[in-house]
Image 1 (cartoon, helix red, strand yellow):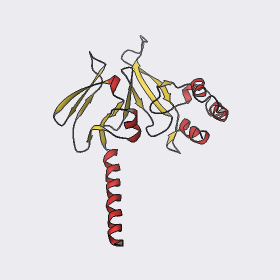
Image 2 (cartoon, rainbow, N blue to C red):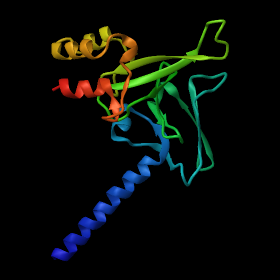
Image 3 (cartoon, rainbow, N blue to C red):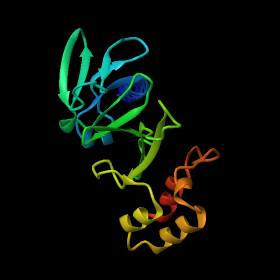
Image 4 (spheres, rainbow, N blue to C red):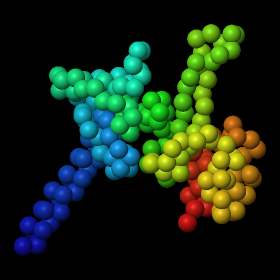
Length: 194
């Protein structure tokens, strides 16, 4: 009986490992914020061995996302779709038919970047980046500023002090900590959120 239990544990362990590896190399759609949190993809493929296409940048209809999966085409509304993981492993979220790239999936405080055309005549064909955050996967993104962070956590004065101490201005809030392999803001959040 003990050998059977050990074999069962080995099989379960292998299934968990293979699922984690497959998920790492997968691409697909997150229908809801819950799916995003659980890392559950619809229309999923292993992009190293399979092909499909997700087109979210429709020229004349920015409200749709087109998915080509298993030889069939699907049209989804961005307003009813949380986001997607691309074949490059990047993750995106839709809000008001706009696409936000999620910089740090898996963290409680999510950080996003959105690129839009620059309106400066000197910067023809260039894009500027705007940074956002949300306090969880279901919350709406808001501009990543020290004032907005403090407003999102109004009672956490220790966090306010840490943010003021660590970041001189708003443009430093999305700096990456190479040593800890995470955004500096997320490290501060982990140390200051109960």
